[in-house]
Length: 185
Image (tube, rainbow, N blue to C red; front, side):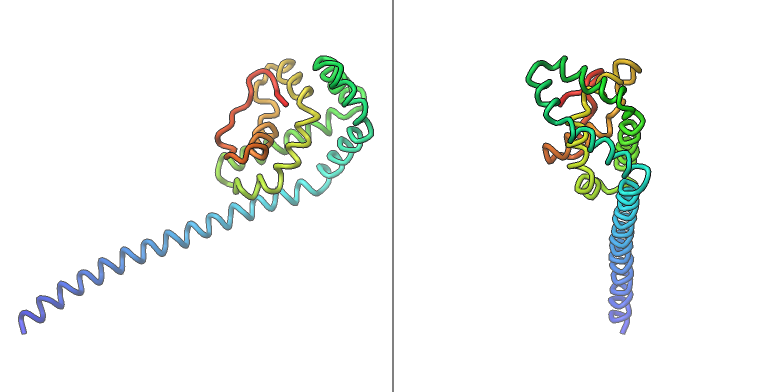
């Protein structure tokens, strides 16, 4: 009888240890799932923001301008990098697109910070905003570079640049830092 009690006490201790261990693993998995779910939720709030006023109107105005002037952009691009830079920067300033352009840039800064702080989900954010950042940056990089030089803020436009690079390469957004003092296509 003493042997039975001895072995049952040992078994009870092991069952308790295993219960605590597997309970801890289960709690950790549940916590991780909730954390991931919360990140997705916050990212989707950014999607709603991106598709609502005033960002929707700013994007529409900027996209419409560049669509209308696509032929001139290609022509200036063929002439020289300086001709393209001058055309893009002057167009944004003269067509009163600076506020709209900077509103879009600020949005990408916000989502970039959100992803880096692990409040937003990187994969979901790239899926929703990668193509938009790629297209936006592609035409607006001369303006971003000019603003970096003019304001001496080497991180101006860093969010949109990082999203563009991540989308283009398929690599994590954490692997990219912004190009210092210049923007590159």
